[in-house]
Image (cartoon, rainbow, N blue to C red; front, top):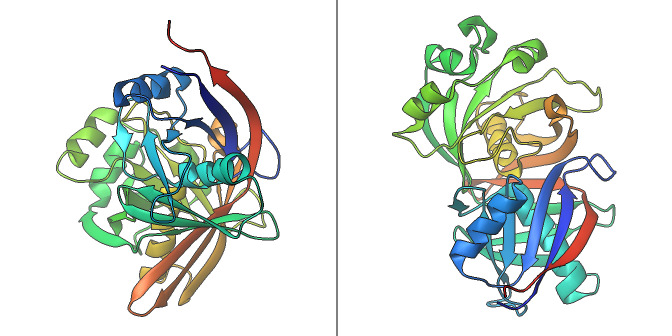
Length: 293
């Protein structure tokens, strides 16, 4: 195959490199089997491939791979890939980049303050679970889980089980039992629990999040745009902050040494919940993959 350029970026950073969630972005369209091998070689939570230099229906065709499986949507790959497309393919400032994904066309806007924003698909609220089920999976007591709100599967293109916790201490203490998690999620679409609380490490932030997703070959995620979009919709739907509009800051990744910051916005408009997730992207490295001999 011909040489391919690739870029490594950090997404949802706290304003500097080596924070947020790592992403590898390849420009090229190798066989899907090689895409999967490269995703496993890089071993970030996701790796993306921009499979054409030219837009189609106004958007760029993109495929997303975790180390073990291709996925239809993921949050930080959308922002990071849009950043690379704007910088490397378009080559000039633009207000918006569209990504063509299996879940549909996802717009990313570039704001003057340096934030990139994606609008996610309207949420789907699914199955609810018992505190007993999730307590066993997370190795916490049932009393550690906030009883005021449901434990619910939510998706904006990738599904998560959302678990409100009563304290930051309980969030820190959680450890996933993978066998029990796989048994529970086997009949559902969700790939992982996303646990959160309103107690934060940084007083400027509003929620603290962990996504414990060691299922498809990725460890705990440093920053999960898809899960945080689901959380934003959930907070609005269930009145977590007692408001009909959400505009908050979400911190994630501290437990694994990758502090991250995500900006979440949600409101109701024309009968549906509109979700926007924003963050900063930093270029870390670029290179060219050697051609196969």
